[in-house]
Length: 183
Image (cartoon, rainbow, N blue to C red; front, top):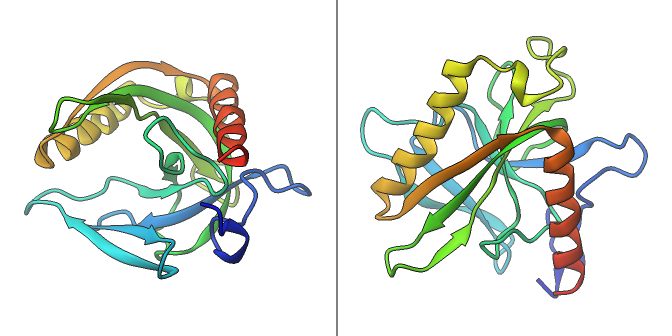
């Protein structure tokens, strides 16, 4: 990530300095079977996988720029928004919590791969949602199940470790920003 300043998305700050909103870059829109990922070498989003028939992303999915998570990639974010947006869209957001988890790769290597949950700042539907504890319990279970089945399809295992509110999620972002700055 040494050329982050010349890489449009990864050169953004995690938190906008003026609005104090979380910057989320969408890589995969809600309803898509296609999983996209930003390739910093070519500075484009590219197809990184396709979900099986009948499976799709339950909400927009993206990353927080200028962060490095426990898996070595920018932090992942599931974004609650009224309508899906396009790949590459920057969405100012409000963090509501995190599903902490560990992921076991095909080779048996285990690492943290937490899933932050945020709400689009301009969302009309979710404008009053401030914390993960206010989200419907069944919806939270469905989101966790999506991450479990998504990883299973790729030959990996995702195990949720717990659900936590925005303060814990903000600490994870702070740590991930520090990791990014020292890389």
